[in-house]
View 1 (cartoon, rainbow, N blue to C red):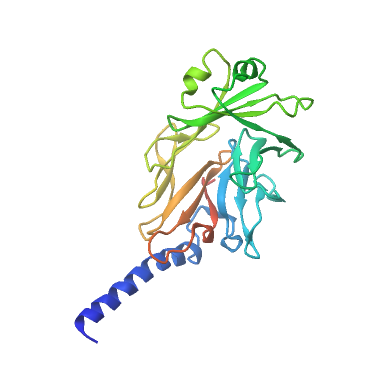
View 2 (cartoon, rainbow, N blue to C red; view 1 turned 90 degrees about the vertical axis):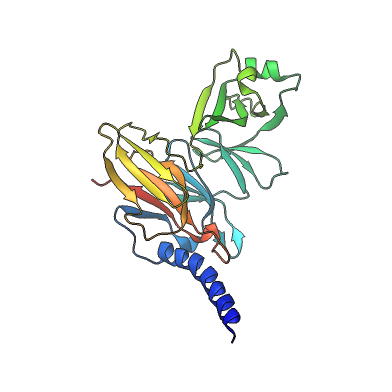
Length: 277
């Protein structure tokens, strides 16, 4: 083998070893202190979304090479299979929008009793928009960091009017909703910024660095760091953060590796960084 061939072989081994090493340390290494498994890697959890109040997780485990959309209640750890809901968005902490595929009909699912209602998608140039807003039972607007999502929801909140629920697409929500009362649901942006994300009880906040991975929880009064993941610099993967638990007990997150031959994100568990008692 020539020196050039040896160099090429060495480079290939490095490219293979780095992502596989990330995967090994995240999946098989002992859990760091104050980290709990919420959904095991053996379920291949993918496409996960934490509910606005942090008490439910929707995710897509793989069973027999097929996705099995599942809702996990975090206060009881009960699971409920959600049929064909491959595409979802939380509307509020009880309701979520469900689609089998991007072009399939859209339904509204109530997680209290799993009843379903249709939800229509319209644009702001729809001639019925003013009437819809005037007769709205509830309007939900979404903020990701400081930016608006390009849609909002209008719900009748009347079981006798199951056909009066709407997703309204808008590029200028300030103008569209001017003069109307609405509820803002805030989510944080996975941009790797160091914004402070406060716990429901306002006693703590977390900050995270997506690239290079660092998730830290602080005391909101003293700004003292309470717990951090990882506890050292031995990890090389990246993370995505779901948000706070409903009881302010910790933060849900999930790892993934990048690079050639890196394992897919679904091969990593959903974890929780817990505030020490």
